[in-house]
Amino acid sequence: MANKITDEINKIILTAKEANLISTKDISDGHHTFGDVYKHRIVLFSVVCNILPELAWKSKKHFNEEIDPMFEGNFVAGITTPLGDAIYHIKLEYWDEFNIPEIEKAPLYDGHTSEEDLVRLKSLDTNNYKK
Image 1 (cartoon, helix red, strand yellow):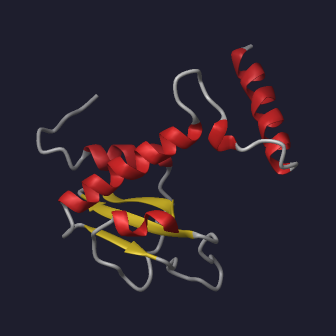
Image 2 (tube, one colour):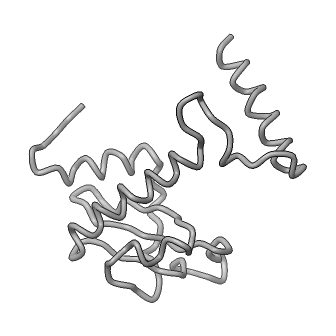
Image 3 (tube, one colour):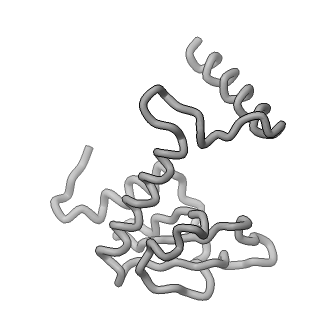
């Protein structure tokens, strides 16, 4: 039943967002808004990238802009891990937070999932943290 309720809530949120009735950045779980969580992700990822700049990169273009143009107002930042690249789209306003090399085009997307990004990021842990 919880999945059905979650699905309905998500439909309501999406409908309200598309009608410009709400900003998803302001939706909260009672402790943090989506906007708060997004900012935390950006800061944490920028710190990882800035600590390991020899493994990190940023680009304002996808690998093939003709068939996959960059989302307006975004760039992509990535870090090469032992398991492959972990990559995030980030708003351009955070470009200067990433003190890493700029490349002309992002590497070709390998089809990995958000969950795989997490596994790849964990693979950078020198203490071999596994959860």
